[in-house]
Length: 160
Image (cartoon, rainbow, N blue to C red; front, top):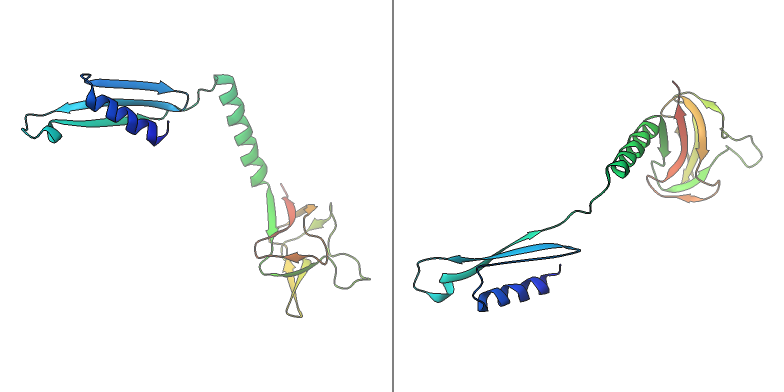
């Protein structure tokens, strides 16, 4: 319910003889109540107070269980993979020279500390080493492409 509608409801309650007004629609519900005090000032005697209650969408128990299962599987899946990201801005290379063999390929076993790619920045070749041991599941960056800081380069599935 938008604020304009709420303000219109407040004005309607102020000019009516009702003490409470409650309205609901698909976006939520609003309950307005007049506060009556013993003060002589008319402005203070009729001050509307309102409470905005947002209705969360209802979800069946089965759908909720499915969502929890997917979240659990995602958490387990993420815990078994390491996404290697670029520590700097530069050009990604998967091999030391154009005619050389690639440092790693999808499916290769890597050990922690092994060189897996290089990032060229300002004519300096920076070796990127595997942070964990495991199997290369995916190489995200394309050789010769520019990568930003924290760009995903490749994914390693952890051993065990």
